[in-house]
Length: 474
Ligand SMILES: [Zn+2]
Image 1 (cartoon, rainbow, N blue to C red):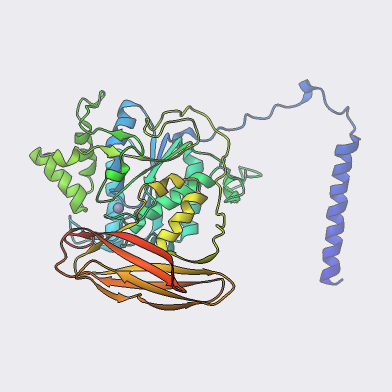
Image 2: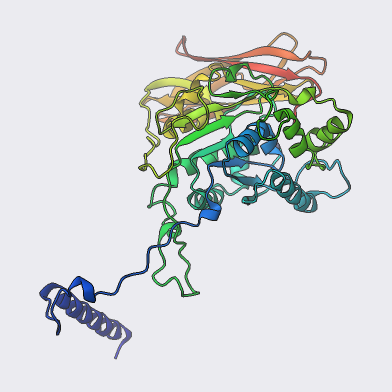
């Protein structure tokens, strides 16, 4: 018998078997009375609850060991004084950068930093801590970090942990391009957390995670048996060098208040938690020194959060848990990407700026667009400011677009000022660069980009540029 016939035979047999069992179900032709009286049916064991040991009220999603110190004061209040359960996800092990405690570098440094983070969090009673295994990627472009982290893989892991920890609230880095540290990994953590917030309640996303095993005692199971989960609120915090734009966009927590349960100010608890990160010069070593000398002023800044979205009734500046009550809420889909009909010729900032404008709308966090109405960037004196522009032609005709760049006096345009031929219904990704003089003083400057076609302006862009003293932070 040919293989094809073999297969047909098997198909027929399976069909026949299915037909038989269907017939039994439909016709009720069983030997005993059908249905059985309730008293004769065995009782099924109760359905097991999600494992409560992993339940979190707050899930923190950050990029590097020590990132949690940005909000440690708030976590101290939530844990000690409000008895909230906290879990933490790190995107990386912090395997890049200098080591303030010894010679170990790279993967060895990452191994040390994982333990520093676990010890720091354990000092606050936080034991549920996971790492997404992304490489620490120095830089300030979120798209680079999403690439090196393997975006889809990292997102799948984050969605799994949201489903496992079932958080009421997610706290994460601000997904925006800001002047300041603006670490690409921080932004990637914010992007992935925002996406995981939106996807964990959708059973069609990473469905293998939510399929209950057919026989949970079979050691060969590969589906995960998690429940879908919709978190209720999403908050962000920022590593920008300036904090004025965060005021009034979310709750603010004083670090000079005294913890009612610990009887010390929150800033002291921040310094204690931070002091575990001894490989990190700016956090662990500084905190250790401050605790030894009692000079703790640097830890007294309030901690500010930005409300990304709330799926329960709550005010923008109210407490993180305002409006949150226990139990699941229905899945709330996000709008997703919607093409924006534009038409004509136009120009926009490319790279992460173009991504974020669409991402915020797609994720239902468009309030982030109001934080920095004028886009901004940091650059070090003596460095080159590279800015990608997108020249769009939504017409059926070939177009010629003239781009001119106006830098501050003394700065030199290296590339970008040119005539661009843009094909119909196409985009020209223009690479612009401006050299910042070595002697440029720290402070805010402005660079403008003007696009013209056929003797009229088709678009102009102004970028606020913060010249950072001592070079660009990494
Ligand atoms: Zn970091």
